[in-house]
Length: 71
Image (cartoon, rainbow, N blue to C red; front, side, top):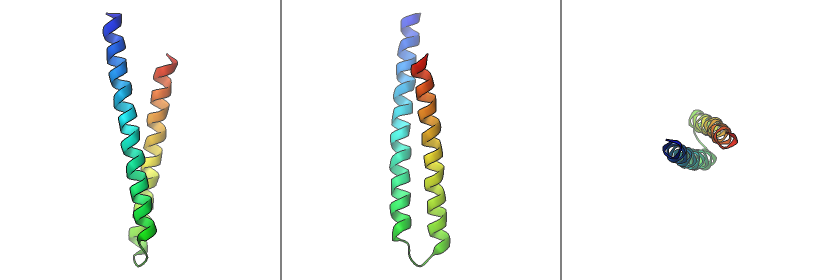
């Protein structure tokens, strides 16, 4: 049973690591796009807010991953 739990945990860690990568890629994309927007302040702000949301989710995912590795 312990071996199955280890496999499940490894799978969950892999999912979290992949999710972190996706969130970071999205954050970069939103920030780069926001930098290119010059004539629409609202769009620029929304893109920056999206990036901020990705940064927060990335931090939460990192925290979860750290908690799993501490166990």
